Length: 414
Ligand SMILES: Nc1ncnc2c1ncn2[C@@H]1O[C@H](COP(=O)(O)OP(=O)(O)OP(=O)(O)O)[C@@H](O)[C@H]1O
Ligand SMILES: [Mg+2]
Image (tube, rainbow, N blue to C red):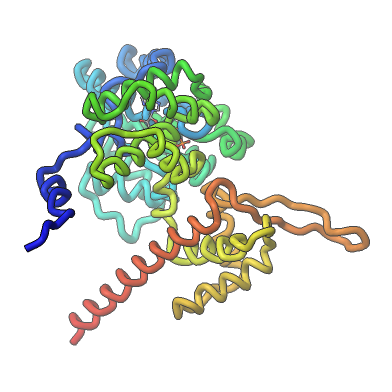
């Protein structure tokens, strides 16, 4: 038998050798045990929420956290809440804390239903939002608990819904304020929340700015220590990643590059990350786009994204129109033998993609001699070919799931 050159690789895969010592610590949902360079913001949040634990009486404290992509809004908020709840408990103030990403929980109803079933085992089918809010506040009062809700990407559910949650205890006649919120948003999206009475109920606005290269150096050094074997990533390599992320001032940009570079090293069976791996990894990362954002899209939103990607992947085409993308959307649905939605519904799908920051829309006057204006649709951060590939994968997964469900329903009936 000849020598099998892959044999060693298999030995290596099985023995689990890796440049990582804790790969999971680079997962974007992971909150590290320390958050360098966010001490001031954490102190400020503690001061903001202090009345909940130090004064008698009921309080509702609502704080907005605003800042650009990847500056630690989500991480800092989760870090704070987890510790705050424990500190409050120690002081005899029982606080229920729940984090919601409004991309996943898109309406007040979805949030209320989740809260009631999670904490009070109440199945809420058939009740109106008004009744649900009533039940929630009554339970909180009866059990003498406080509720701390984080609404991440809060612009998706909107100011009115947020206000009605904050106000619920008063509206429902149980007097005491028992619900506090942390409302997270990027700056432009926050503008859409501001022009409503909500701004009058915000006790503090914590502005988080982009990270400087010194900030990123400390943060990425720390994250590299947590994730990699000590000999697997050199200081020069971390510095190279710091330099790339300094352009966007975005910590996630650096962390994602680190992760992909490490995966490349493992795939190639190397025991350290090289400069070339960082250069390749850089190409995989779209710093403005949260990598999981596409996972939250519904089937027809995916078709809509696919349609725009298909149109914009042709060279020389930088923007499309609503009419044109609708045509591409119908073709995309057809390709997967799925009936297309009508245009007004399609426009709503477009709005979701705009809200999620996947596509951009601007309005431009028509060319000279023609009256009116038209919407111009562009892709923000992600190349069209990549968006096409990712949406196709997700569409195929969704359709497969749907057909499996159909099959099992059919079997049950038979
Ligand atoms: N000060 C820090 N120390 C350690 N890690 C950090 C720090 N700031 C951010 N990170 C990490 O950087 C990544 C991005 O942070 P986060 O998700 O909190 O950004 P964000 O401001 O919520 O961005 P977006 O607006 O895109 O949601 C996460 O993996 C987070 O753990
Ligand atoms: Mg975030």
